Length: 266
Image 1 (cartoon, helix red, strand yellow):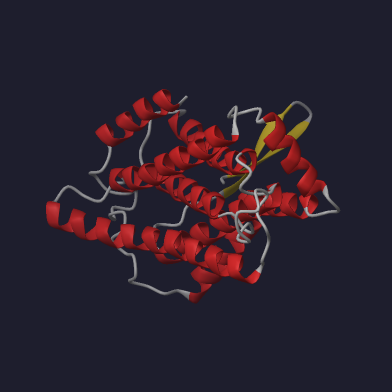
Image 2: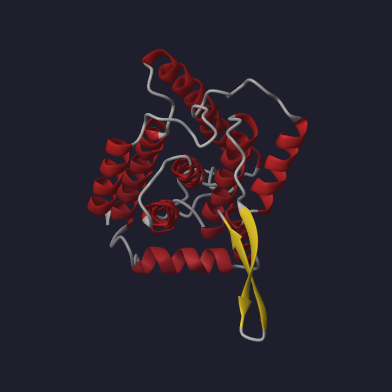
């Protein structure tokens, strides 16, 4: 899977980076230029109510019931069904997280920011500053919460188990990569494959932390929700890209009536 994704991203980089967005603007051009309170409020609402925030948040709440968290952690570390060993899981979590971080940079550079060198560089720097701030704030908030919610790790190495920094950072990078892919003109079918793959890789980072005896399931699930919420909010509120319809409702005729199709982009 990893080799396939590297090939696909090679195609992305090779075919993007220049040109402009559909409205003629450059990706990153309008970052920091307009602080619209309505847009900021809408970005916060949309980020929170997105399934990529609500589903892991609900999952964390479920695992926190009784001793479900501890039992799931014990099972994962005993069987290590995906990564084969605790050490293998820990290494995989680091490797996958590094890949996602690199991918965030690659997709940002591949977004269309014009054909002239100086405006291209200026737009990229502003856009990357927003995305870097989103990741930095995610990591900072995760650290603050670790200090506030003292919880021993499953391996008892320290009391910084909740929430998972690996998980919040991985899902932050996956979210930003997926947002960047929304701005890149890709062949039909490429975008959903890459975006789904990003979430799978981030999920792999999270699960590896459980198999590696570094976190409980609720730690990584809350981290996933936090990572998505923070980066989706900051990206959508402050990068000031042309707003696309992330939710659409269509009607179409069918025999003896009409059908309705609801599409949600996440």
